[in-house]
Length: 124
Image (spheres, rainbow, N blue to C red):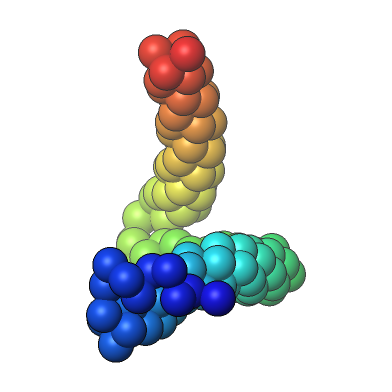
């Protein structure tokens, strides 16, 4: 089949290059399939991890609030005169900090979305 090529190139050299060409082609073809497979597997793992995190999130938040309330109770117990006022001030302060954190997250996500839109406009 390749006899006419052997007039220009030695048979051993041609076979070596043909093998190399086959290996490179097989690598290129299988690399695409493997990349797609690896992406799908990674996405499935991330989705499963996100679902586990979402399932555990309410429990973690509840435990965190309980710890914070216990901490406030201990601080209030160490106070002497004006204990009720200081305790309510600490509770109000913790609530304000929580609301401030939620507001920061909301503003940050809005800022990130605006940045993404700017980048998309520049890419077009």
